[in-house]
Image (cartoon, rainbow, N blue to C red; front, top):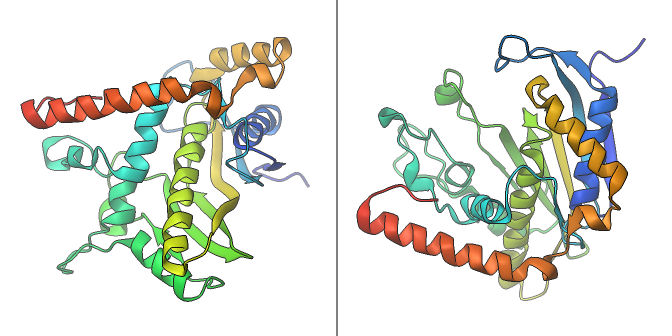
Length: 278
């Protein structure tokens, strides 16, 4: 009997290869199913359980040109996840953001507990004490808050372990927009993996490098409303080589540096004026 929910299992050398192959297989094999975001006339999404293993998330090329945003937006997202540059936008009572991943990972607040929990600090301490521990994980879900909100966190858990001075990380998503969000997620999460490896290295006094990255999504889906965009993406695959479809970091360093300067200026202006920036 066929599986009710197809399983997309990809093993790749780098991030853009893993993402590209996963969305292609989801397009080809994904189960048709409606979503809570469909508009009238939208075809059902294509959906699968995805397990994407990237052997070296920092191998080049590192960025896929078909991601749904520009390089400045990608850098902004990376800083949101790793540095929490937009945590101050969280204010659900005022109709603003209900959470950020950074806030949930670095300042996980629990009712009745006076101090928020820095889960990443716990992960670093646990790995420094016992690199082989199976207990180094961080979560985002808050059942007392998330069960009733309109846009609950998609990222659920991060799990870390060190093998032969290589930090592996598994992340688990309850839901993942395969075409429009997954690459940005993978890029941001692996940079956090790099930060954890760096902090553990400092604690242990030896080099720990980021290694195998596994991206698990219970629902890895391509929305029906995106099908026309996705078909244009398929056309680029036919016309361009993999090298032409991707960026090497060294080739876009100037763009990323300029983006970092723009982000810093925007944050400074926001702090001075109170107007929301990038």
